Length: 460
RNA sequence: GGCGCGAUAGCAAAGCGGUUAUGCUCCGGAUUGCAAAUCCGUUCAGCCCGGUUCGACUCCGGGUCGCGCCUCCA
Image (cartoon, rainbow, N blue to C red; front, top):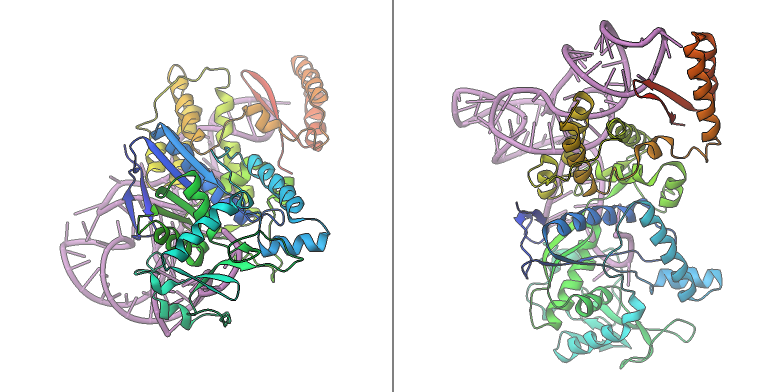
C-alpha cells in the first residue's frame, strides 16, 4: 500500500517516501490576494487538499503549508486604486479566499504563512545568497546570479540560452545576465517597503516561498505543489534560491503540478474577460458540485469548465447521494478501505476520476442489494468519498439543499405530502396528482417508496 | 525558435497487449395508481498512415490537428 506520484523533476511516476518516516512536509503555493479568487486558483487547493487527506491516512504526521501572498505589485496597484493600504486590501481578500476554499470543502492547512510576516526571513536568505556569491546588488536591486548555479533550469528542463531566445520581456539594464531575477527591489517613498541592507524596498516574487518553507518546514521538504504555470519561472527560481542558500542541499523531493482550467474551451484571461470567480459559481452551484467537477478529471490534465460540466457533476452527485439516501437509516460499519479500488486509485497519483467511478460502483451495489452487506458498503463508500472531501453531508440535506433559497417552505411541502398520503388512502388519485403537480410547479419532486414519500429540489 | 502536453463513443472521463470502465444523455423493458428513484438490456469509441505482435485503443515510428510554458498568470 504505497502512494505513487508524478514528479515533475524526473518526469515520471515515483513511489512516494517521505524523508522522515511517518512525517510528511508539504507546501502549496497559495494566491496573491488582490481580488476574489477564480476557479483556476481553486484547482490546486482542491487537488492538494485531496492529497493532504490521502497523506494523513497514510502517515502519522502531515504538515501542510499553504501561503498567502500579501505583498505584490498587483496588490499595490489595487490598493492604490481603492485608496486603502495593502494590509487592509490583502486582509480583506485573504478572508474572502478562506471563505471560498471552505465552501469547496477544503480542510484547513496546518500552517497558513503570510509573506509580510516573513520579511526578515527573506532578507536573511538574500544576505546568505549575496555572501555566497549567488546574488549581487545593482542599482538598489538584489539579483540572483543564475550563472552561479550549476544546473539552473533543471526543473523546467530548459537551458538558459533557450529561455532567453523566446523571452517576451525587455531585459532590465542592471542585470548582469538576462536570466537573472530579482530577489529584492527598491520602493519609492509612496510605495510599501521595508528597511533592508540594500535600502528601503520589497521582496521579489519567488523569495517568499523559499523563506517561508525554510522557516516552517526546513531546508528540504517532501512535496511542493502548484499550478503547472509555476514550474517556470517561480519554482525554478525558488529551487535555485533555496538550494544555493543551503549549500546545495535538496530543496524538494517531489514536485507536483496541476493542469490548467479552461473556460468553454478557452484559456481564462483578462483579455477574453472569461474569468470565473469561485464566488460567482457558488451562487449557482453547491460547493460540493464545483469540487466534484474539479476532481472529475485527473489533476494533471487540462479541465474545461462549463455549465455542462457542472450540471453533469450535479447529476452524478445526485446519483451517489441517492444510494446513500437508501441506507440513511443503516449505521455504516467501520471498515478499512486499504484494499478498496477507490483508495487504490487515489494512491496511483491521485486518480480521482477512477476513484469516483468506484464510488459509482459502490452506489450501484447499494441500490441493488439488501441486508447485512449494506452497512459495509455504506462504510466503504463514505470512507472512500471522504478522502476526496465528497459525500459527507446528510442525503436529505443534499436533495433538499437550497430549499429556502428557492423559496420552498419545507413545512408546507411536508404538509402537502401528508395531505396527498391521505388522498391516496382514499383512492382520490386526482387530488394526489394535483398535489404532485402543485409541488412540481414549486420545483419539488416527490418520490414514493416503500418507506414513504421523500422529496427533493429539482435542478433549476 | 526552445521545452512539453494532448487527441477515446452525443457529452464528460479512466484503466488495460486479448476479457463490461464509469457517469450523464438517447432508446427498449421491468417496477410504479401516476411519477420519480432504482433495476435489466441495447446502441454509440479510440485523429490518420505505417510497424512490432497470434492479437493494439493500449507498444514503436511518421504525419495531422489542438493546447501550454519560455521572468511575477493556479
